[in-house]
Image (cartoon, rainbow, N blue to C red; front, side, top):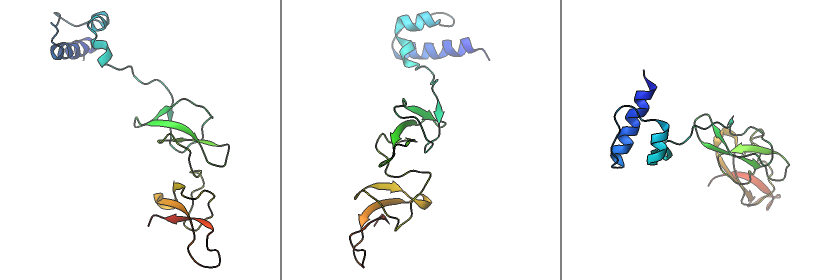
Length: 140
């Protein structure tokens, strides 16, 4: 398979779309840059590939997962630990220590993913002698 022909064919298709006259034969990188078509071919990602939930260093640049999703290095609330997450926001719990319904939590209205990949909320108990204590509860 001739890579130059494939690039040339792709460039010709881009040129046709942009109403540019294609050149005879394969296009060179210089020709693509000159026509502005090179911007349509983003550079390949060369940064680290990470796993969501793995620990990371504070202030790490965003990275990618193996399936191409963007991953952010975020802090775990009430700790100095950081993990890779698909959301760029404070993480309520450490994914290495999943929580279960009834486990004590510290921040009312916090949300996390608990045991069994179920969404859980930190809410006060409604009744009993421990009424008002914050515990992880399943989504109502």
